[in-house]
Image (tube, rainbow, N blue to C red; front, side, top):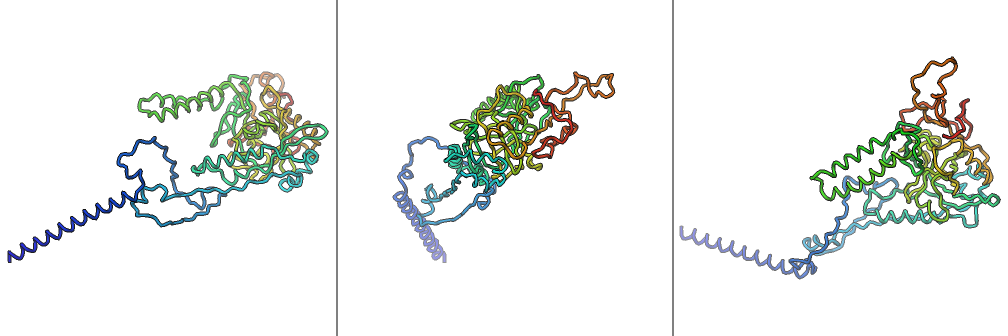
Length: 468
């Protein structure tokens, strides 16, 4: 019995040894086949060092490919091809590929007065002289330049889906036309676009309090002038606090070199912002009527400049304005919150007044008055009226803006000999500040705006005509 058990154990050991030997041989054969089939750079055990490549940005978070962005149509399809074994394909970067291909149709610009009227039906009736201002080829090169910039931005950001232009921002311009009146020779640049909202700007001399700080808010505008009073900018303290935090973090011994490089750039920008807020005053998006043009529009043959006068036409109304800020080169159609709320009372920094391409911007290049200073609404009204007359006139009166900046706080009143006097001469508000009771502050971003459109102010006491 003992002799049978010993024989059994010997056979079992022999079987296990054979199985182990077969596994080793099979593994060796597999490695040999892999080395012959793999690319040359994988066979080499110690490849030559290569420069470190930047890792591609990863898309994080939950993404629904059918709804990546508002208005972007996504077609998703998975294709499979026969390949080698998984070990080989796992190390081949071309074995698992996602191809991104964005197809965008380039729009054709409107050229005739009839095409303009399809978008804005009342435009030919409101400005009857426009038809005579259209040359045989009225489209400005700025239109093609605008869409070339859009395409370049799309290509640069195609791997950064969070930075990709939406359908709304890609198709935001109907046309850009260069016009000239045959009799007065007055030149104008006509844009047909939508209207986004710009709530930027601040001016402690006119309004020492801020109007809020929505997303992407900047306390400065391209239209600026030297400060007149020592009153600090309402956003200066926040900028100085950010600068201090950045400088303190940069001084920490634990701050990494990569973070220090980022902080150096941020510190330089914050120092420039602090200097600018201390030295200059700016337009206020919530109180001043102005429009924004792309930076590329300030160069070239049809260039417009900061401070140029403009007419904004929507429906039957014409709003006088100035070019107050310069925006990004790949977008068009933006106006101040004051102008936006006059067109649509529901406008906010996050809610545009005109989503369709029905807003017409008529800009008059070379009409800016220098040196810049606090905006004089009556002067803007008069200059825009004169420019409208030079292009054939308007069939409706231009909207008259009222000063809605609240007067400065009144000091402790002193006894007055006259019972009808409300303030001493030294306490009267500076010129250009309306004393109408409707100009009281509001807790929202914008101050109350009269609802009248294209008519004179309803209040019996208009704003003074003198400029600050």
